[in-house]
Image (tube, rainbow, N blue to C red):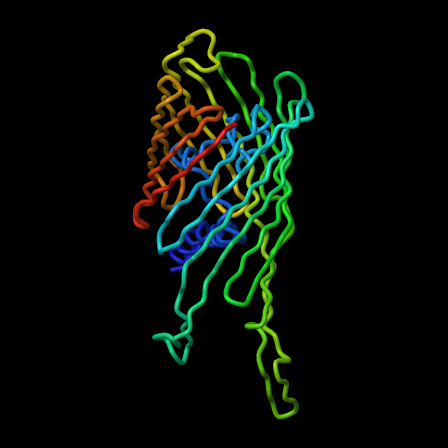
Amino acid sequence: MKAKGLIVIASLVPLLAYGQFSRVGTSAAQFLKFPADPRTGSLGGAACGTDNEVSSLFWNPAGVASLRGLSATFSRADIFADISYNFAGITLPIGDRGTLGLSAFYLDSGEMEQTTIDQPDGTGAVFTAKSYSFGLSYARYVTEWPMAGLTVKYVREDIWHESAQALAFDIGSVLETGLVGLRLGIAITNFGTEMQMSGEDIKFDYSSDQITLERGAELTTSEWPLPLTFRLGVALDLVGGTNDIIASNIFRVTTLADFNEPNDTDPRGNFGVEIAWQNLLFGRAGYYYNYDAAQFAYGLGLQVGISDFVVKFDYAFVDYQVLSSVHQYGITLSF
């Protein structure tokens, strides 16, 4: 009996250790993990090693240093449970001094019906949950090849009459190696203060035999960190692009891979491939490794020059398995 007891205890130790040290569900502002743009969404979330894209404001601010003109992007995704989110960004080169950028991320849960213990079928009232992020970015070439960038952003989450806010920083670098189209990226995102919910709905009346308080008691809420994430990315032009060995003016084939380690879950991988034809049509495919729901992704892009500016349309389809599929659309203008 003693031997059997020891075996049972020994078998439970790994489970107890996992429960004790699991990081899942230990951060706020989870919306900061959603793919901001359809190009990256269709590439399996691999974006840290790319540049020349306005969406780098979200993934790795250093990447916007290579943009040569005024550029703006907007994207929208309708995801599961009637939740939608939008991303917008604009960049402005300031000569040899670098590039400035502004970005905004907005998630809306849609209306939800209020329920209580006494009225589990609903009270008739509705409420919403919304999340925001506003960022100011600066990026520039440090020397001829490496780029560096910094974003300062304000993060806020609202649910009914409660809210929480934080100040955060993103910092990153992209290195154009000059070797067969290889680019390397590294970034730390969402490094900032903690978030704590406060508002009118956590205040309540309290009475006892000794004291009566009208709205004088308040529920205690905990502070939670932002989803701090370390990213390491690689982008390689196999054909065309910046690859001088296998050069092509018609096709470009680029492979991308990211390693990212958030502070609230296990390490993850992002893999994608993009095929471009005459810089006009784009086909993309990606894979999300070690994600709870997202797995395979696909996408298309169309880029057209009109007068003095270029307009690009992007679409992404991401399979979230049991949470259904997600469609994301985006448009980018470059002057």
